[in-house]
Every structure is written in C-alpha cells, then in structure tokens.
Image (cartoon, rainbow, N blue to C red):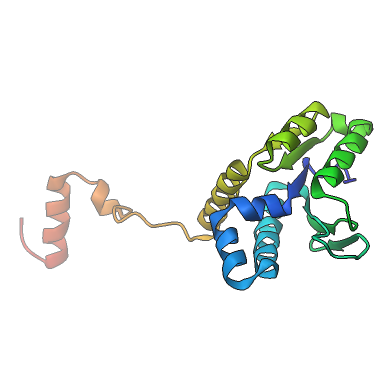
Amino acid sequence: MACPAFQAVLLVDGYNIIGTWRSLRDARDLTGLETARAQLVEVLASYSAFKGFDSRVIFDAYDQRTPSTQENITQNLAVHYTNFGQTADSYIEKACAQFRSDLRKFEQRLIVATSDRAQQLTVVGYGAEWMSAQQLAADVEGAVQRIKRRQSPPKRSPNRFLAHALDPLAQERLTRLRLGLRQ
C-alpha cells in the first residue's frame, strides 16, 4: 500500500468513471478506449498530486489474456490492469480487505471512486469512504480551479494609488499643484 506521507489512498474504478463522465465517454466513443484511459490518467495525475493522494486507477483486463500489470505514472498515481477474468470490483474489494487489516488505516483514509451501487455498499462495509463518479468530477474540477487561481498573477486594483485614498478637496489641490495652477 502507500507510505504514511499520503493523506489518503484513492482507488478509482477506471472503466466505471469513463462510462460516467461525459467527456471521457465521448472520447471513448469518438477515438477509442485508449484515448479515454489516457485522459482519465492525465486528470488524475494532477488531481492526486494536488490533493496529496496515493491514487490507483484500476482497469479490468477487458477480455485480454494478459497477466496483471502495474504502471507507475507519478509518485502519486499508478495504473493497474487486472488479471484475465478478474474485475476491477474484485481487485478493489481485495485492496479494501487488505487495508482494513493494515495499521495504516488509523493514519490514512481509504477512498473508493465508483458509481457502482453494489461496489459502494461493499467498500463502505470494509470501512472505506465512497466517492461517486460525479463527486470525483466535481472535486477534480474544484482542484483545477484552485490550481489556476494559484498560478494566475494577482490582479492590481485600479485604486491602488495614494491619490485615490485622499478626499476630493486634497485631490483637487494636488492636481492644481501638478499643473502649476494657483489656488
């Protein structure tokens, strides 16, 4: 599992999220599943780093007769492809069961992102927090907005000059002085 420096472990049911988020569903339908997976991974890489989560996106083997694989994308995000015949749901349930018996559960949160109702009930039964696909989308969008605000330069107030803090009579006197007019 994760090192205690992470505030939470986030397990994401990849195909469930792709099927639920409109942008990912459209990408899947237009250009294929690989594009939708890549977009989800890209979004979650930034989100996980921003939130300080140890995130894992789990994809079913999807009828591929390949062994399970794990690809570390960043220090905050890994992509897991299950074994042939293993579902993302069973992978997530097993991870929840292992986390439940781990002492780190007292230091970290375990969050599962899926909109599968049966999966929700199962992971909550293991003591994990459940996050719907819509909640994840809203949280990701909120994180993107906070990142943008942090990166944009501060706006300067048009009234930042000392002259704007003066009363109108003082402003008039200064203007006359500046223009060389007599009082």
